[in-house]
Length: 518
Image (cartoon, rainbow, N blue to C red; front, side):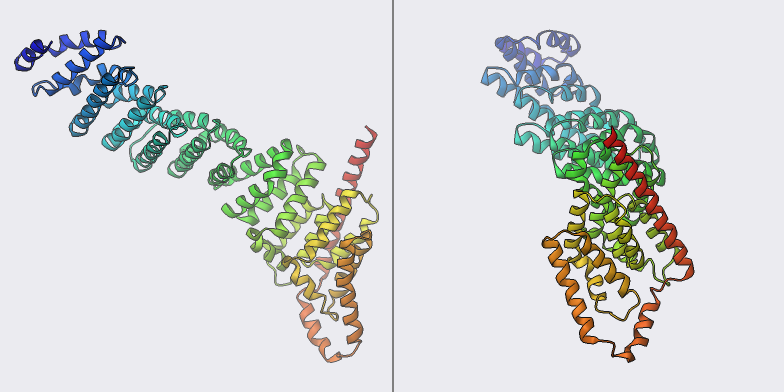
């Protein structure tokens, strides 16, 4: 063998084309002696200056990779050494045919053997740096291999795969060449259904990047992507859910998709109540941060009010959830400020529209409607609602919501209301006080009753101490009141809103009676 190798290395006319078929024929053999012989010949021929083995590398690359899992340590080391040398030569070569080798490397990334996977993903990493845009025709295959390695049990393989993924993402993001989105999205969609968090996170980053890079072309794939993205909202990982919401928010930047996404989220909540209980608040708050809180609430309120696909019971539950978020979430402070100003004379038509739209939807939940009026400083409407509560069936659930509202009245959100209780000469003070006393009368004897009663007793004591003196301050109080005074037009609007509340309450009453009858 050594003698023949010496002859070949010194020969000026060795025919590699006749040697390669022999190499291909034997390289898949598992006999250790044959493998050792072949690795030796490949190494020798590669050392001959006049023979460029890189041109033939795709013909025996798979065989060399298979030797990495050989039981013989010497063969494994020889194969690994040969592969390292070929990778070095590939990096130095000016002309490389990546296609056939990429196919082999992708297959090796799915190997059961650790060294095969590690070596293959390392080669792909180098190929991405070397090939750049030349690898675009194979990007979906490479991405599939990367995703497989990102969820690998071996830390080293995962780390290399993550770096390789970032490199490929940058290549695709920065390229000016055209590429086919379909195979790429087929790969990403299937990866979103995997169980591994790292894989799903990587897939979501890819989708987000593609939506940013090619928004118009991605529109045709939204119908296929959306069901999978919505399903991912139920993932056990908060990180996956939050990143998923970023993707959904980017889709929602277009008006048509904005309505579609929010409607789909509401439909998902309707079908998966457990998701609404566990993640409903997180999802809504994140949507309000990524998009516009006012737009999100207006659209959801409109969908809930108009859609016949939702049961009245679900709409009531959803309104209760949205209202609690509105009253407690820091992310919605701008919307709360807008609502506080929505009924003042100086308020713009846009602000008034926000109040009316939300009120129409909030009518599906009595306590939510009442607290909404308190937030918007619509105290006349709040008192009118309290009086109408006597006409409805008071359930345990209703009383629990009232109890929760009393606790919220002690929170910073309603500090304006508590301070307005001091303005005993203001015109809005009487309906405000009556509203809160009405709330007190609804409560059974409890901690909530005691807390609210103590608050109102303090106000009454204040009124007694002040008496009817301080007439000089009456003009100031009237001026302060003027901004919130109801004109004839707002009174007509108020009557419409209350009529809407009565109609919706009647619908819910009939629905409950039908459920009890059945």
